[in-house]
Amino acid sequence: MAERLGLSDMVRFYPPVPLSEVPALIAQSDIGISPHLGDEFTQLYFSTKVAEFVNLGLPCVVSRTRTMERYFDPKMVRYCEPGSVESFAAAVLDLYE
Image 1 (spheres, rainbow, N blue to C red):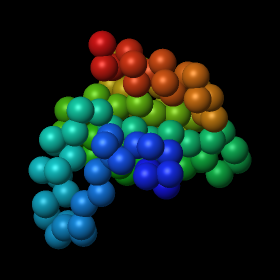
Image 2: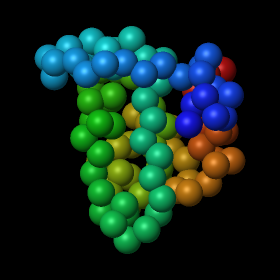
Image 3: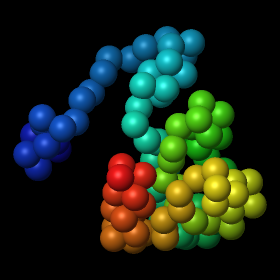
Image 4: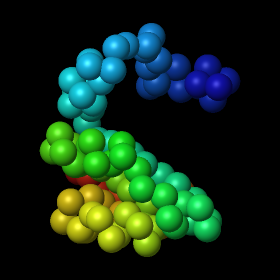
């Protein structure tokens, strides 16, 4: 899909790594993302990946859902509106700048 969309120079795929190496790889990232639609399931969904991002001090973009708002203060994550490409892009750009 990355090739078809002309994004091969911007997307990297890595081979599987041992679980013990995952935190170090995440720490090398610029931002963490956890975009979700705002359906009945995702309103209740808790992303352990976001907890890992926050624990590592990584800025992250998270869909605003009831559950995520319950556990993460807006000072901890940058919220975007579920299902909104524009809101997600604005949040990513905000963190980038």
